[in-house]
Image (cartoon, rainbow, N blue to C red):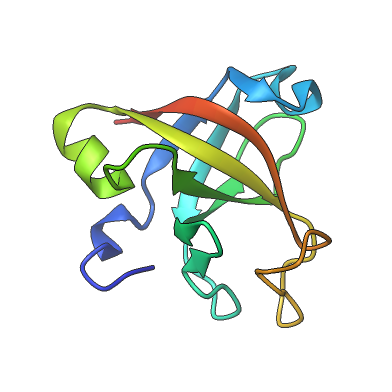
Length: 117
């Protein structure tokens, strides 16, 4: 997580619809922003945030989001509770995670997710 973005830790988002792999959108999921020592805070696409699913079919699974727009995720959140993102499945979380590997980081969808209060 980039310096100054610590305020996002614990923020929860609702992911319910998206354009991509449909198995991730069968049921809505609540995702919470977390920090892990093995996650670098950036993927090849740019600055990133790590989330864990709290509900839904993928409860306990890690995901990451990068901004789909020129505006960063914090910039989007300063304007609205909705953010336009690329969602990545983190397939091999932990110390062996390689952010540049398609085996570890699968960008499966574009979605608009909603910050929950």
